Image (cartoon, rainbow, N blue to C red; front, side, top):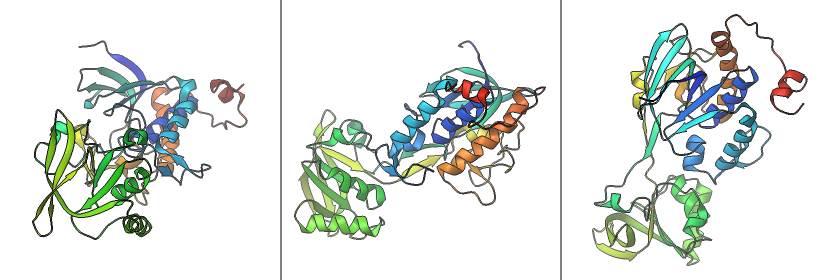
Amino acid sequence: MSETIKTDVLIIGAGPCGLFAVFELGLLDMKVHLVDILDKLGGQCAELYPEKPIYDIPALPMVTGQGLTEALMEQIAPFNPQFHLNEMIETIEKIGDPLFRCTTDAGKVFEAKVVVISAGGGSFQPKRPPVPGIEAYEGTSVFYAVRKMEQFRDKDILIVGGGDSALDWTLNLHPLAKKITLLHRRDDFRAAPHSVEQMRKLVADGKMDLKIGQVTELQGANGQLTGAVIKGTDNALTPMSCDTILPFFGLTMKLGPVANWGVALQNNLVPVDTEAFETNIPGIFAIGDINTYPGKLKLILSGFHEGALMAQKAHRYVYPDKRLVFQYTTSSSSLQKKLGVN
């Protein structure tokens, strides 16, 4: 067992809300460690749509998921947060008042006065299509998310699905790919009508293919696809060439070990108060998409607000004898000093 890591606050989840919480906590002199099950920072934003634009972040008319993550990292750099990626908190044990011992699936142990659950919808994974042997191609020819569009330049791509992700990436990758084929089980799409209209125009102009049916078989060797077999609505089997498949069948959200941490749950979400977004366990907070309360909106900007109020209450646990004086970054020289701008 590794040596126990002691910190003021442990944040579970390094998505945008968890990252901004570092800023709010840092302004109040609280040291933070973050644990995330993913291999990168940015949570769902960076995992699912790093290059897709987000339009509802205040003062940023447009920013990508990756761009938002990078900007948050720059903002919190003065507070030197410590990150632990590819790990999942398995157990949380109350050992003091306030003090929690948190253990990861890798055996790492933290002791923190405050725990902040910022885990989005829990741990999530793409739904895998029911195609025999698809696992052998995952990560080399089959991808469930687009992280770098350039990776797909000059590829013969089969995109499978009928929702926004399938249509968005059909349109976004079309200029890069050697060939794009969109496959859906029916000629009816759940995506935004404008996206469907654009896709149909590309098909009409002969710039891409649309097929109705399902993938039943993959062809290739050593993780490299050479083609697939499509079963049409008439049950006829048709082989087609492709070297890359992007299946967009949605995500399976798994609450994971959150259910075992002792916090109250309501429909797989964590109920919190709206004063500080604290759970039923004093010292454990939940911010972002994982929490629920009357009027909750699942927006990144709501999670930022929740993180700000959480930090005010967290300060009481970390510094019980210290009076908290509310200050503005625009006028406080001490806050500006912490940020390195004074």
